[in-house]
Length: 435
Image (cartoon, rainbow, N blue to C red; front, side, top):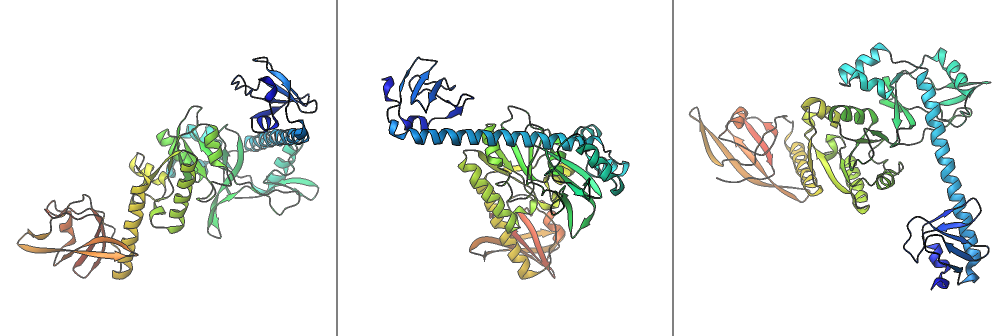
């Protein structure tokens, strides 16, 4: 049976190249999984060093296709080796840069007191204060004397000498799953055109390079099966430092694809992801769509997906929530998340119709309808249907009342106080039950 190996068997089997020019494949005859079969495409023969199967390739007419395949395989392998070499070089150069810098007292205080990071973790992560403009050229030339820094983002030729793009702020190194630095984000001391964070880049400068879009991993250890995905490396660092959970930060809510993040998750057999974009994901259509898009693509890759949910009153970002509450937020499935999105759309529609918002959040699902008596005053609650964008829900209307009475145990409404108009209070409720 060993003489029936065909070019299709070779073509569609996982394969590796060898220095001698042969191809190694997993033997189709013995169930080998470690590439013990060697194939010489030029001679048209094969030999498995595990089970002893050997012979000639049957359809030798397609041998030229096989030779082309070997060349393509070699090119892909060379491309992968070059990519690994470039990633390692980038890590070395950025490490050299950080080793030449320090973190100012002002920036250390900001990270400790305002962001709540432990000093030990700040040291471990190697946050640094961007160098003064008068020092950048000396630092760049020092690194260039030891390494080839051409095409490394952030470095450029200033006349005859190497230099570094000048910023005022904190350098935040971005690390991949292997802990190698693949980029630097700068938290600016003062926003520029509304932007508080910029990439360490030298795009448009002499022999400079544009920063590559990359992700950041905080707290990954081999064998981890669940990760949280958020936006922004500092946010991920804060959450890992305070919870011990593994966080992945993408540079933007729609940038996960350009970072190849799903491929990286599959490579490490990570089976569960919790999407933790900012709390406005349920009210900002742009962010909502990003959550849905990421969810769909993770699900297609057979990765279990849930979504973190919290009220924006408890913090805009997940780092704010963790800092304020001392714990991670509620995690819901996609069906529940979409219900909350629809609920907020109704609530926003009501606000647009009736005016200003009152940020009182109520708890519980049940409300007593009809009459509520307190201090010899009557409070009338009316229930009516409300339709907005084809979404049907209920509005509870409390008239002749005092909004403080809504906090009384006799009136327990699941929803959020939407607005007040005179003495009338409107509450959007997901569910109303008459007792």
